Image 1 (cartoon, rainbow, N blue to C red):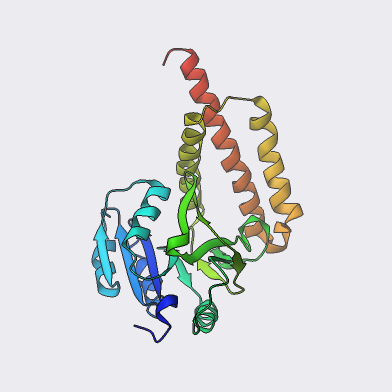
Image 2: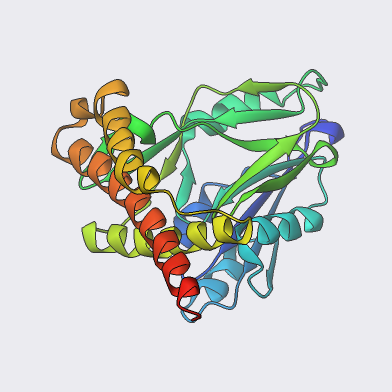
Amino acid sequence: MSDRPASMKISACVTAGNEEDKIAECLKALSWCDEVIVVDSYSKDRTFEISKRYATKAVQHPWEGYIGQKNFIRSLASCPWVLFVDADEVVSPELREEIETLFAVAHDDAAGYQIPRMVRYLGRWIRHGEWYPDRKLRLFRKDKGYSAGEEPHDRVVVEGPVKNLRHPLYHYTYDDVADHLKTINRFSTISANAKLAKGARHHWGNLLFRPLWRFFRSYFLRLGFLDGGPGLLVAIFASYGVFCKYAKIYEAKKNAGRGQ
């Protein structure tokens, strides 16, 4: 355990599934936390076995979705503060130092902290576009926050002031282009189903113009072109993901009209 004040101790919470190639580095970078918890959704590889080597507590739990799984792991935390980290993320040395310095003394002026994420993609760090700084509220008081949002995009909601941290959480999102496309297909299906469950209707404007706007915003307004070829692919695939989501909504509505 650290020598931080009792009110500033931190539970690092990692949800994982089939991440045997990444989970060890993720957990090693959390060794400074007062508690490290892993919830594994019954991986078919060695993720759970590896997790038990590094975590204070490692349990297996059926997948409840991105939001439900995060709320479940939060309930296991025994420290006043919770740090959410995904299995494909690594706390940078600079971020660790920033948090440890900040939490060395007790303070009650914030309920949570947003952390910028920096993605490693096709051999380079992405520093512009929609992927950076991509601030996520990941460090928060357990009694002030919970996970909400719309699948597959969970987000932490807190009661109280939120501040920003400067240094990044490294995100090793995709192994390659094929992995990126696979994730787009999976996430667009989840997102389309979530919108359909809320009564979403098909509009041709969504299918035609939202993808174009997403590309323009990512590549030009947010300076994605400064990241070279990878930046172009990030913008194109972001646009493609939006197109897939609304195409699947169109498909579902069309099939429903046929009585399927």
